[in-house]
Length: 130
Image (cartoon, rainbow, N blue to C red; front, side, top):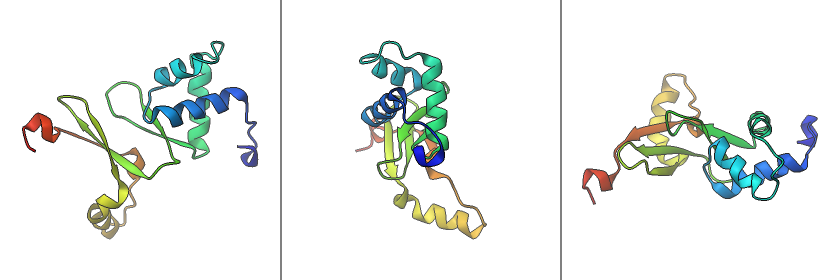
């Protein structure tokens, strides 16, 4: 953060740590986690900080529901999401598994942002497939 002219404040550290520990979390979930140790942090601080962290490439967001975006750390592997419309289970899928799809898009001169990709459907459990 300092390299790009931002101060690394205790609030920013707490918010980044909350995203890391929660895996996938909405801003409200991040706020609740942060307030476990810093009750003075408010929602607007969380929203502004998540925007800054995303600009810096430290977190990504995806739309896993029709509500608030869900944030996750970029420290893990690059992945996209499968969301079951029936049970709402979220499965992270490694970007490498989408290689054939990426090749098709590349042939069309398009480079996808897989970290933002969410595919909705029905999981094997809800479809009764094992």
